[in-house]
Length: 119
Image 1 (cartoon, rainbow, N blue to C red):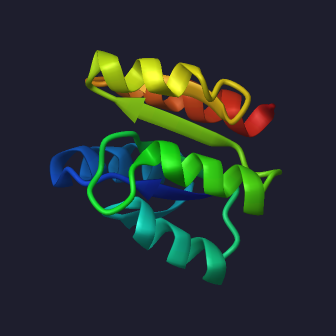
Image 2 (image 1 turned 90 degrees about the horizontal axis):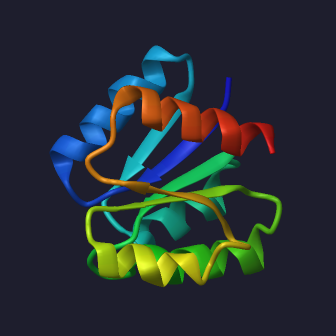
C-alpha cells in the first residue's frame, strides 16, 4: 500500500489517523508540524501528504505550497476544524486534492485517501 506522511499537531487526531490508515495497510509517518514534515520529505519518499492547516512552526498552507514546488507529483490532502482555515485552503484547490472537515469519520478519511491516491 501507500506510504503516507501525516502532519498533525493534535495527538488524539494523529493517533486516530494512524490507526485508520494502518488498518488499511498503509505505512504511516506522523509529525507534529510542517517544519518536521519537510525534514521527513527530504529523507523519505511518500505517496501522499495529509496535513492539518492550523499548526505551530509552519502551517499546512505553507507546507502545501512548498510541497507543490519541491514535490509536484505528490498529492496533498488538507484537514481543518476551523471554517476560516478551510477557506484559506480553497485557494489551494490546485495543490490539495481535498479539504477534510474535522471531525471526520473513518469512512470519510478512508474515502479521501483512496481518492487522492487514485487521482
